[in-house]
Image (cartoon, rainbow, N blue to C red; front, side):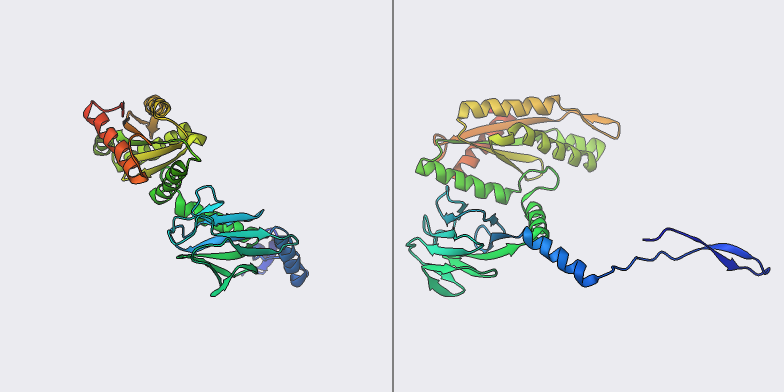
Amino acid sequence: MIPWARMPEDDSKGGSRPRKAHLRTKPLVDNNQFREALQAELRKHSRPVLMVVAGPEVGMRLRLDRSVEVGRDPSASLPLRDESVSWRHVRFEDRGAGEWAVVDLSSTNGTLLNGERVSDSRLKPGDRIVLGKTILEFQEQDAIQQGFNAELERMLSEDELSGLWVKRRFDAQLATTVAAVDIGTVDVVSCIVMDLDGVKGINDTHGHDMGAFVIGTSGQVIGRVIAAQGFATRFGGDEFAAALPGVAKDEAVRIADNIREAIRAHVFQRNGITVHPGISLGVASLPGDATDAEGLFRAADQAMYRAKRGGKNRVAI
């Protein structure tokens, strides 16, 4: 862009006065050369990606940097909850020099590539692979596409207020973790269900903006305590849940109490107003308290209500 310039302009008295020049964009010397250089740079950073375009995991994507296997096995690179998919259904194989292939692993329902049943076939961008009721698309994405899809995935899977996972993503990962316990690759999984205390009073006294601030900030506090120990979600307004793979109940109770203490110690201050919410937490584990993901969540939820009835701002099992 060129700077503002003062240019002479005739006035009604025969003199001249300065005027502002219009802002102009400097043209590119060679549009084609610039465009080709940009496209070449983007191609350098292109990566193959598997995108789930239909099925229970729709919207999920897996960047391919090595050969991977896909199926219902929770330890697969892309675990699928589709019951019509085999335990280890298919392998996406890196054959070097940018060449990828899909290899069926003797699956029950077979593998379709663009509508044709295949056992071993080379892939090209845009190919669609059908595994049972799940459809995958093989894509090559440049840096711009990768950034766009990463942001889209974040928007679809992250709660805007708290930064935690949305319930849908939490439920899917909890089901995968429970399946891992069933086959013995994970020993135990614990669940914590949480409900903030005092939010209604905060809303009534200070307005819903303050209530939303408390809920969102509480989610951030919970996320920091959970960190790499598990994953968490916000659901139902001021309710939260966390799952802790490999964490036994006694340790989960300790983590729940750390969350309670972190909420108590945090200064919830906005626009010069300070409020003091509490939190009630319930803990359950699988195996022991439940046999499936739904039962585990329900057992932790019932424990949370025992904490409420017991006086609030406490942990119950």
